[in-house]
Length: 571
Ligand code: ADP
Ligand code: MG
Figure 1 (cartoon, rainbow, N blue to C red):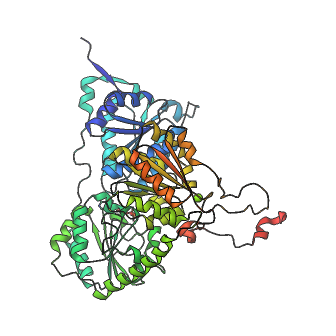
Figure 2 (figure 1 turned 135 degrees about the vertical axis):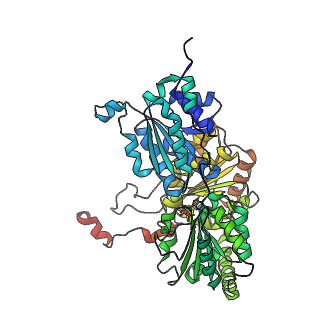
Figure 3 (figure 1 turned 90 degrees about the vertical axis):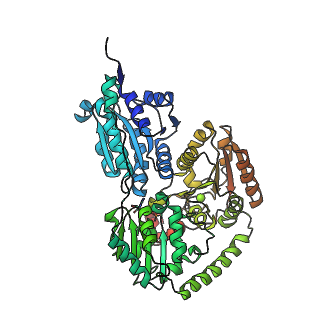
């Protein structure tokens, strides 16, 4: 009797399932169409997108939420490259993801003989991925997927590229040899236990501090050590600042949150304890006018080379956050760490002042709406629904959204992240909805929405409980910029002010709402969430609201020449 045989397609699906990976986000086409079909036939979930970038973002955020690598499946060359932005974004943010791409005939690709969708994909992926592998023999599929899983999850998580040639997918292999070639990865994200010395060094520094401050980053959120983290903050009494995706690790109305006194706290703290947060641009690299010149740092990070990356770290703790928190809690004698009472009072009084000022802005009801009033309407609805995921991108929509929308549960806020990338909106929303089964509200600038807007067809096709609120101020940053030549073509930052984004979703059977005031916005959001169905709310925002580049104007270089000089001859 001839031996039973299987092929590369089946082996890939078997290898993924063996490792508990049950969902694929992708775009079908040559040479992976049958892989997608087979995965679905074998009980995996397959979500088909309209663009690989969004599929990749969905996979990345699913990885962040589940601590299993999110799988993105792409076709060769152009599809592969479309997915690469999402893979690079995953690597930059530390989200575990594997992009699996089919690729064309290596013999032709390597001699550059002009194959269909010809590209040396593995080498193209390397600079953007935590690791990149290519499988050249069907019997290596099991090992290839095992290596990809381990690379994505261990240490600082990241994006991994796995190249599967068309030949390998189609190759047949003896069934017994095939099943023996599969690998079930044991302990893919081993804990990293901190040295006792590093714990003692950190405790000493914190005990000597007068004005200590904790900064929580999304690494702390990813670690899912929520109760130990909270215990650490509450037993030490140290005030804390959440980075945007760490909001909700402790509820934003926690008395120790210094978020409403952020600038004050950063400028005065004498010891800052970074927990899963990097001293990158989002924290002004730990120096400059925002910071106390003599601040010293404790940093907990799983990645040893993160230490001293921007500022000297006086007390590095190289460890996973769960293990580090347990060691710190065990080692800290009660009362050893005690922030100055005056420090806590100063923060509390700053908070009161700033909250009052914010309250005044939030309670205004301008016509048309501005960012404050529209976000207040959304905030009021979401306050009763802490289970809802919030996706947020844009410039002003992002900056104001981060400050105005309070979060009460861990890992519920998903936003542009470390790269400040625009276009994550629909991908993250779909990834969060499919990975959690929970509703999602995506608060989108009108420009940001445009990068992934076609995925509302995907949302409607799968009937996902996603409500998209498009903050329509008719432009990038603002909607009132003029063409400086005096000509009639729109300015570089102008979008269509009277666009009816709500009509887009109606084309796919979703519910469209047009909200020109806070009352209709609040009602639209309430109704849409109650329906549990796809919806899009076109929120009419004052085109003169918003500032160029939002809160990061300092990063936007400006021409020092006058307008007339810029116009040159035309002036
Ligand atoms: P944020 O943007 O919120 O400040 P970052 O992405 O800059 O957060 O930093 C997250 C940090 O957390 C990264 O340096 C990463 O290495 C680290 N990290 C991720 N997961 C863990 C973990 N389980 N334990 C410890 N550190 C982690
Ligand atoms: Mg806009």
